[in-house]
Length: 492
Image (cartoon, rainbow, N blue to C red; front, top):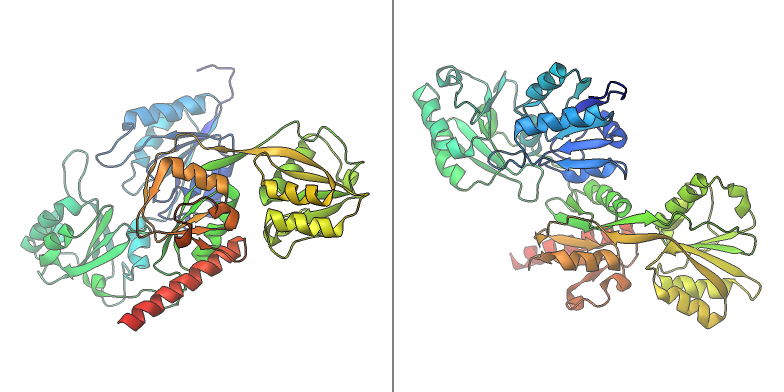
């Protein structure tokens, strides 16, 4: 290690078992990390909080599916910290609860690397609670015991001691040993009719709860899928699930789009009870020299996306430009979502079309402007030409300035999407998706607008939001889910 180089550091962070269960402290560390070394997280949406230039290193540790062994992971952490980087070791759940975080800390300490550990919400508490089982409950369980279903050196806990426990026992990674767990607990004093539950795929699309007794545990395991927790004890018979009715409860949604779009829509859908997965197949990159000219010859600034607004003001800041150069301009936005983003920069738009499409924006501008006006359109390289066509038809002078470009993300894994709904936020995102992924027959396709759905072979089966915003998509999904429930009730 170069003695002149500033020493970096490593933070071990438990990401919980859902992107909504990560701590605020954890999000802050993700935003400031220069390198993230991560496992098979239960919810990779937490990675969306990282900076654009953060280096991602996937190590894929999971039982039976190791991309990197523990020694290799330890060396990566030391190497990256030795380069003076702020390294984040990101794990699902909590780093110390069967996560081998202790081994990594000991290795870092021996290597002289500064490190810290931030707790995560453990799946052994969160998943049972999510599915209606309290791990402790007055009169039923005064203790909870976490046990690993297997261990690296083939040792096991004392089943003689476990059999005497009156509290809840939670087995991690024990599905393949369910029969053995059942047999040995009964042999050591547990009643065969002790309540038991297997909780499958917590906080995932396939999440479900299988109830039974300790004697039935092996049969229950035949119906289960991994990852899974096994709970044994009186609390496993309780059903304390949420009774708050949410319009999208039990519905699964995959959202395809840019980071900004997916984050906003995911937050909205999650509030209505949906289980949301993001698929960020595209990314946006600024054109660094896009603002080389001044604004003196223009009367209007036109924005067609929230991404365009954010990138524009970032470019202004990076180039040392003064916002007062734009005091004489009027501002037009394609829709309410774009207008909300503009308002965050202290500017109220002068024009928003009644329908949020490029064509209607062009028509509205044609009515609002005259021959002395000149428009500066600030948008992506592959923006809709329908805006240009309307302006050309009206004889309006404009410059279509390409301030950023949308491109395909690298290393897309492909596969089949089988969630209840698949949402597309743009035509480019949809086309990129179609190059790498397929859709199951049960999945309903949802597009933010007609332009996004254009050219789809099954366009008659595509749902299109009336209002081309995240709120519009959410409203559409809630209406569709309600109609389906009513149809099932009528058929019943």
